[in-house]
Length: 294
Image 1 (cartoon, rainbow, N blue to C red):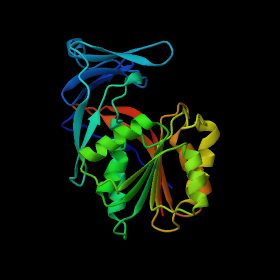
Image 2 (spheres, rainbow, N blue to C red):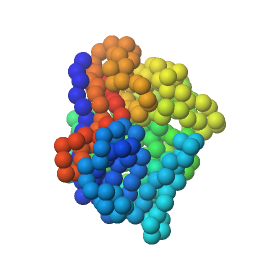
Image 3 (cartoon, rainbow, N blue to C red):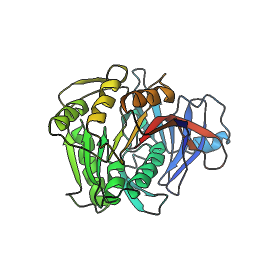
Image 4 (cartoon, helix red, strand yellow):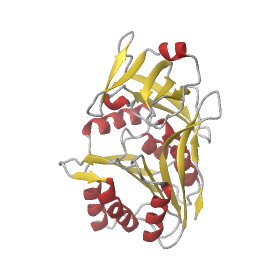
């Protein structure tokens, strides 16, 4: 087992300009915004006038949610372009949503590159890839563009519709990604009954959430069951599994131990995820991951 951190870099349409005092200053497709970042416990580095120039800002509410304030009207929806390490081009539709989200998580670009790298090593012309808690489909679209047949699972109809729009934006054929509105554990239960197997699996579970039929997901209670179920839909050879989380208090060694206890062979690595600032070497923590290669 090994430890390595995954560092996402800024790119033309995304710049992490500064962070500090519980917030981050970003430019997303030309829109300068301020969003909460609880990990940013240090002081800000750039002059305050740069922060004040942001045209969109998230104001946190007492219940943990947030509302956007815009200096010149809500700029959404808008598109963002990203290029992978191997030079493939992608485009995603973004919207500014509650809780300060945009529709993709920029630290996940390092995961997208990992998926592209692993699928490029496949001996199959069309490997199978399963994306659990798939959100708006960025990872699914990367996998499909690598030649994979993709199964995408999320409990929200809204984000599945959003994912289909991203699919069309990237000219991915409708037959390449199957979209399932389902509780993830219920989907895995049925996949096991059907004896389905996948060449690769990505899971990015929330700390807490609801399934399509109000099934309750709690990370601490259910993550062990999820990994056990993933084991049952995995191929015995040439398989990869990536597990990520932002759950407070969970360290990457815990994910590594969990995967190692369920999969008796293969190489397991884990580490922190972070985003490098555009103009200095600081890293903004952005979750943890573990990866299994068989």
